[in-house]
Image: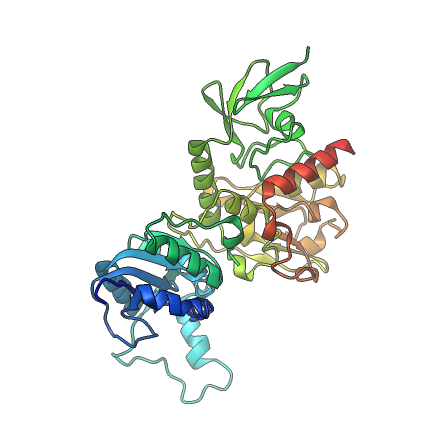
Length: 179
Length: 239
């Protein structure tokens, strides 16, 4: 069993939509788990990844914890993959890049409609927000990119089977979408 | 005996005065482009149509076809350069396809698909750009403008107006509107003007039409831009 390919996945500043799309491979998941073993992932609840072959990263980088997780993945995964629009260009969360962090926090926690006991959360346990949301290739080296919002289940399937079977992954025209 | 050029080994006839782009299009050879549109004077600014002519790099949309030219077009290194150019266009603006009405019908996106561009490669600029939603029927989202000047040319050459211009240089370059207020609502633009329809990206949009065709059924969702471009541009030429 130790010969199985080890895959870790995480969602940083993402919506888990890419993970949901991954699960859309449906019954092909049964074929996949014959070949791969999941390490750190929302599927397993393992907290830290160790010696993985493939790391799938959903979402961009919006806070300090995202940076630490991303670096942990890079350190422990032979192949690191940016999955989805947010990992590739920041995506929807990066739309806050045009508004100052102070304005964002004030709108959410001070001035927002229906806010009670207004205060900006400052518990030391909470990761600090970055001033801008960044794509992950600006923080660590990324080996492959799977565009889409989200990439379709077929993109995950084609990419992973190519990689597992020793082919250079390639996506046909129909599989490449930015939306 | 008509004059000929050679593109990727294919012999292509041309008429005196034609550009390489015009000769190629007539012969059914696609050269990627964004700022070129056969209806308007060539501008040569996007550099997507970069080809190698007798060992030198030229823009096919502005360079005249001349007897005996040996041209490389669909070559690996040229397409790599085109991909880098496209990535630069993406990172210097704000091109968030999932939230853009033009997705699937966007030529910038379609060229990127055609070149199998999977990432942005460069650090993103996230420039702060405004929207102009003042006009009753037409919207400008400056985030998506690539300064191709097609709206500028269409307004001047087809609509007989002078609604748009490009102002500033380098990173400060931006599209401006000919009105004292600077707002589209105070300009002469009408939704029926060609300038309102010619934008290759989602920078100039007709309001309330963006989702008439669902995502997934749009022009470039299943057909590559080379096919779409050759069909429509040869059709325009025949007319």
